[in-house]
Image (cartoon, rainbow, N blue to C red):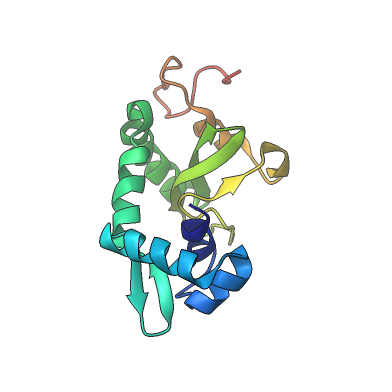
Length: 154
């Protein structure tokens, strides 16, 4: 998992030597793990190093179907972003962190790092607005006709 995390933190490919240095593991250990990860489609070996394989995307796509919330929230977030021109995110709490699972960007949206799967501390979320209410949707809290939650999630 540390190898996947190290590769996922980078844009593009990561050379094996860099993984060895960053993870402080033996070259043979990193190589054996990379071979196994590659066999399962979790990493791909390119000329310049390793990158995450599309199997990770497949697994992540399944993970975001969390309690059916994604299917309900996605069209509402798209509509909200289009109507307001702003950024609208869907986030789930997992292990005390917020995890971005969907982002809809309007034409006036700020440039904000809410990439799929990014984990953030809730204390770090200082730029939240009323749109954030959509991030805290709970299946027990029905949507109003306007697309907003009738009561704040507590």
